[in-house]
Length: 298
Image 1: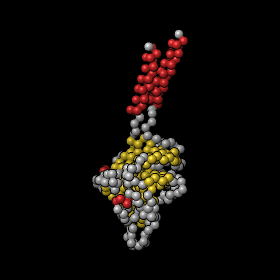
Image 2: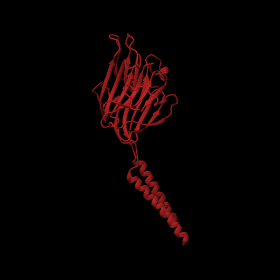
Image 3: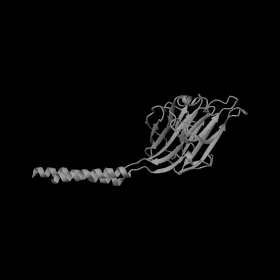
Image 4: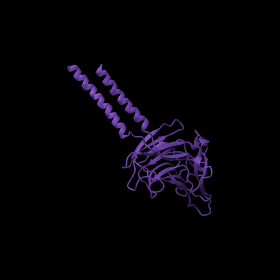
């Protein structure tokens, strides 16, 4: 009977420790914002939510003089089929009449700093939806950008260097993830992973440790898309990601890059105290086994 009691107490202690760990290991939110916070308008210098710096919104046009290309930013509604009425940040470009085609001709970017660099154990999460004004809604979900385009988001260091990007480029049906510390405007290279494009995707970039290893969970909410996780590494020599930048680089007439929310949170991990309780439970189980051996010998 004593042996059964010892075994039962050991099991209960382990179960209690595991339950305590489950309850206590919760994510801590360091920064969050959503488009619904901007009822008064969205422009450079505005800042909603918590944990982020003010927005910087830029439009650059390098096409023929007088061609009339343009772009900008506003709060609209998400083009994703799952939640079309959700308020969304929206950046766009449109070409001029003088043949201003080709990458880097019309570029709108919306950039925002983090209050502190993304640290090991933290995750940056954003949703993303692309729409090309030249196509129908159905077509936009599989072919969202023109032949010479880069549309998506990137994580930058403090100098503006690209450390990671998730871009839909060149009129294709795929996101391309670039974790190779590329130069400006995110041209894909042979090291990129490809992920089938769905409207209103969600991307969670988790920095696993201070050496720059990361995991990216891409969850497609349209067309039966299921969460997919990729791994890679980025260069942390300059301090790691300190900014996020959303890009519409020559997306075409009426093109839109949209997202509804963005956040930074910790990745839940067991606390030392919880691990100590588990260790105590394990010790109790060892005592049970030892008592059973002594009882049999007697």
